[in-house]
Length: 75
Length: 260
Image (cartoon, rainbow over all chains, first blue to last red; front, side):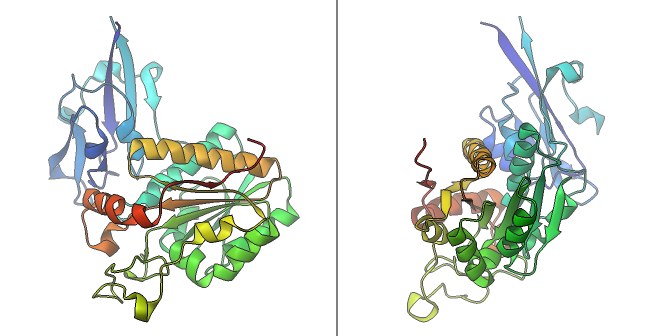
């Protein structure tokens, strides 16, 4: 079976740190940063690059649409 | 910031599976973190992009938290007086019957001050699509009790919880308009989980397709959270919504056209 690997890019300055993407992620690979962005919000980031499958669940529940998803077949 | 970007070699256009739609512009939305308005905006914009009707659609903005929604959509928008979006939409649709027309209103706008306009537009069967964001509270003005506030729910004007004997019963607008002959498609959805977002997007698409076929008013209620008004964290408010709002406002289609 071909494996798929994904990654996300978060628009850090637009993220408001609501954490809804964290509860939507089936593989629990998104975390909140310790540092904050220009507006003072912590922002989402991918903490485990190998765990992301590129399912886009985080992106479709993001209220501010800050997540862009990439996905690639491997092997 | 660069250390947070991972799998750089994958980031190229051929691997792109999801990005924010171009029907929404790059302005940062003024909504509170975790507010369902942003998701609802994005779903509507995505459907507009998929149906390729960006130049054919006219939106009517309400008064409420989403009063500035015309700042975020790259489509023609008209602001309406408080509660009067269905009346403005009626005029726009009658002048331009070939255009798509939608209204987007909250519960303070649609279910309180605009009840008459809503019910009569639905009863006349105006060929428009109405989006109703129900969070059970007046969000913009500071969390006052709305017609849709649940029994026992705290708000800034019902600090001990809504008392039915004194403040009346919560209003189910969606069930109310479903019995009117002018409506063709009435449904209640939510946007707090990926599966609900996908279902809501299908409902939005259906509603606009029914409008294309001149079938009457389509009405989509989206049960949403108001974490600032409810005084909760975003994820906590979504859980509260599932536990308390959904038993009273059950999700699902209430009225679907006969042809299906």
